[in-house]
Length: 162
Image 1 (cartoon, rainbow, N blue to C red):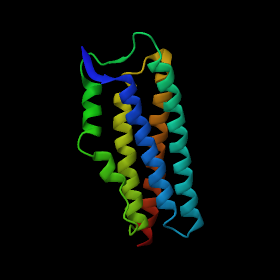
Image 2 (cartoon, rainbow, N blue to C red; image 1 turned 180 degrees about the vertical axis):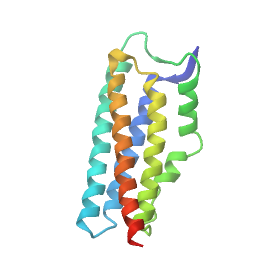
Image 3 (cartoon, rainbow, N blue to C red; image 1 turned 90 degrees about the vertical axis):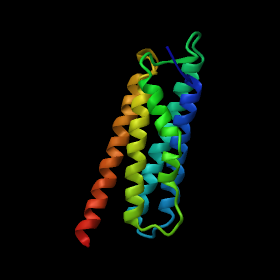
């Protein structure tokens, strides 16, 4: 049974998530004078840009495969993840910045965005064949989880100061 999402569309969504991540962390880094905070946020933006390149490469290889234009999702679970993440503006609302956020606000938004990415990429992983880079999607999930840890540790250290 087809999920109704083709591979090209799913990878475009993944690329858009990563682009928004780059913009979020870049804009957030510009809001702070502290070099340590700026460096952490710039580093996270660079990691998101690297993920974008990986997904772009995977997209090119996957979409070019004859007979693999439709995502394989026999039980519809991956499609449910995709709908949950893209219907409504779950991700957009998380990464929107006004410019008046505190570091605590930025960290919380970043954690929420990273969690959303993990959920989305878990669904994406199900539609990527082993031979075309499922392990790379798993690696990106692990990196996003590390981002959650980095942001959570920084948030924890802020809480200890107040």
